[in-house]
Amino acid sequence: MTTAPPVLETERLVMRAHSIGHFDAFARLWSLPEATRFTSGKPLSREEAWRRLAMHRGMWALMGFGYFAVEEKSTGAFIGDAGVQECRRAIAPSLEGTLEAGWVFVTEAHGKGYAKEAMDAALSWCATAHGDKAVTCIVDRENAPSRKLAERLGFRERVRTEYKERPTIVFWRD
Image (cartoon, rainbow, N blue to C red; front, side, top):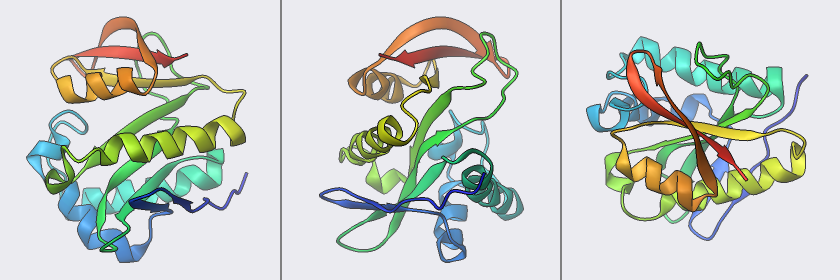
C-alpha cells in the first residue's frame, strides 16, 4: 500500500511528511532527555534518529498512515512529531490493528497547545481516511501532561499494564 501523506494545516501549524530537510531538527528533538524520557526511554544518537525518521516515512508506504513532521506556520521551524502508527508492540492487551496515536515536541513548544492542535488535525484526518480502525495510545503513568492531553483528545483509560518494564496506561478513543 502506498499512500502519499497529506499536508494538514491548522491555524498555527503545517503538518507534512518527514523529509531529509527535517533531519537535523528531528535528530535534535530525539536527542533531548525531556522529549525521550517517556518515549524511547533515552536520548537517541544521530544514527538512531535517522532510523526513526526512515520508519516514519516507511509507515505511510506500508500502512497508509503515519506520523507527521509538525512545523510552526509562522517560522517554518520543525517543532515535533504527531500522528498515528502501528508498532506491533509486545504489550498486553495487543494494539495490533489499531491506529496508535502519539506526539512528541521540542521543549520550546511545550505549554503552547501545539500538541493538542496537531493531534486534533491528525485524528480528524484519521476519522475520514481510516474511520473503520480503533484509535489507541499508550502513556507512561508518570507522564501527567500526556495523560491529561490524551483525555482532552477523547481517549479513555482501558487498562494499566507494563511496557518495556515501565508502568503504562493503554487508552482507547471513544
